[in-house]
Image (cartoon, rainbow, N blue to C red; front, top):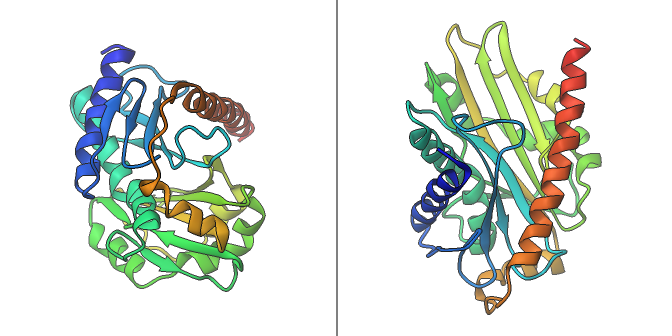
Length: 269
């Protein structure tokens, strides 16, 4: 499957998954346009060839505005074919990341939970549903249902909220006893301190593999929060290519720096 074919599969997946949230999205060149000025941008996953099942998706809130925040995230899917893996990855993104963005826009409590965390003053948190997958998932699901993770991670997260308007925080953790992973990414970049804090929590370790994935948006309270919620009601822009290309290029550069940092870190272990 070449890059153009992968793009087509991912775009169709985005249209299908966003329909679950009562959002009509349509393919428009390199992006998938949604209501108002919303859209989803797609880029090739850095450093991996076809068949990996990884996707990089950016939820654009102000299409046509080059300096507006874009909520980027990567997801990996499971399956026996590349199409199945890509479809699974888009579904994973939709269940967690897209759900949080739609809830931020919708603000009805249908697709996520709203939090005001005392340890993160000035930020309004929107947490999408957690996805737990693997063996014996009930224990990890139950643990998540009884815990508030943001207060425990807040001391390490506060300094990483580099965008004064909107920050995306992804949590991925699990594995099995003795072979665990705990990773926190803020705006796509690994946050080592928050990752260590997540790994130190008492989530259940089992003998078989099981993981959890969830996504949290932290939006600045006040004018920023109010402006974001009007995105779906704004008239769509006529031109799309340059702002989207700028956003993708910026993300690509950031991912490249992160990949080199991660490779150097692993080489030193």
